[in-house]
Length: 153
Image 1 (cartoon, rainbow, N blue to C red):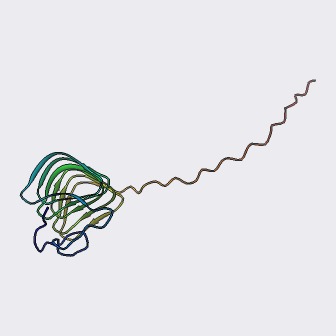
Image 2 (image 1 turned 90 degrees about the vertical axis):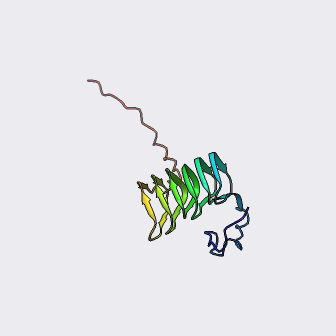
C-alpha cells in the first residue's frame, strides 16, 4: 500500500508519504492510482480510493476519494471526503467535504456539508440534522371522576 509522493492528504495535511492515520480509525484499505475495482465495498474504518471504483459503498466511518480517484457508486458513510470525482448519490451521516479539486455529480444527504471554492457539485442537497428526542414526560394522572347524579322530577 503506497501513497503518491508529495501529495497532501486530508488526514492532517502532511505529505501522504509521512501521514499516519489516526489511531483507532486507521486506514483499512487503499485502492491505488491505476487500480480498478468493481463490486460492493463495505468497511468499518477508513478507506482511501485513488484508483477507479464502480459499484456500491457502505461504511461505518470515513471514505476518502483522492485527487486521482474516480468513483461511480452510491455511497453511504459517516464521513465522505472528495478530492477526486464521484458520480452517484452520497448519504453521509456526519459530514461531506468536497475539496477544491473535487467533483460530485449526484444527490447529497448530510447534516454538515463543506464545499471549498473551486469544487463542483451537481445535484440536490438535503441537510437534515439528526432528530434528538426530548425526554418523555409522563402525563399527570387525571383527577378521579365523581359519579354524576341525575335529578328526577
